[in-house]
Length: 326
Image 1 (spheres, one colour):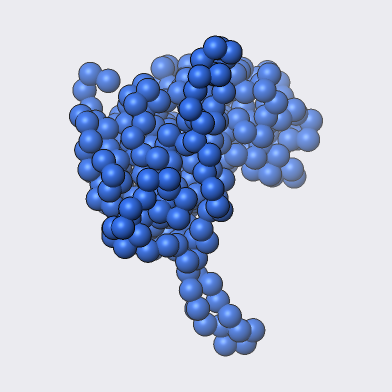
Image 2 (cartoon, rainbow, N blue to C red):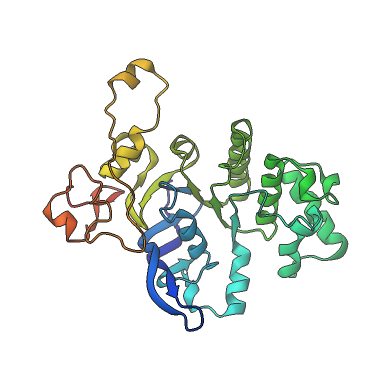
């Protein structure tokens, strides 16, 4: 990108879910640290990929950035505005500019509502259109996501998974947002449909000037669609860089292990590649290890890795990593 204009800035964001005990007098006995102090920026017009294994906190991070979950700590700035400083009505107005595409196209659409009502709900909630104007806008959105506008009176069960995800995309576009969190939007779809949805998202970004946070665990797809990639492990971001820089020159041991698991479509290269196999299980997010979260599985961890948090540092220009061994 020629000019880096920050749209979203995340500073030390945390989301901890309380663990409680007791039936009558419930008391907190601990917390699940789903997101535990992440910081990064998303530039206007780019796609930032957020990757990591299941349970690392990717979806929680996306929802907390949009304040669908109230942060436990830290701040999120959207176009220079601190979202935590906004009242309920101000935040509701700001949400016109921020939307989300959910992972499961079957669970995210109300089965009792027609497509017209589902896509038109943001228009009603934000008083953007009513009556015939709302119907025309819904039909326009269906055309944008390449569905027949005559489908507006059908129900979700009458559509395939790929069509349902397009309806979810149309709903996200209804309020004319600038920023969309795409929460694994293709993981529940057939492989034959995934490319169509990804191409649609790229075309919409080009036509409408959208900014994406693309959450996924398919590393090949992330390299295809994203400009920069952040790698998350156990609630923290361990590495962030331009996509080609990250894939060609990974620094963090966890990133190297992740990328070594991606098959290469060349038998000669595949045979000569070094495989990094991680031992042990992911620690409990309610009781993460002291020091570096990855220390219990890291093949190169030394003394201070087990006692001190690694600093977030710029190893190369635009390439950030949290690791003591850099």
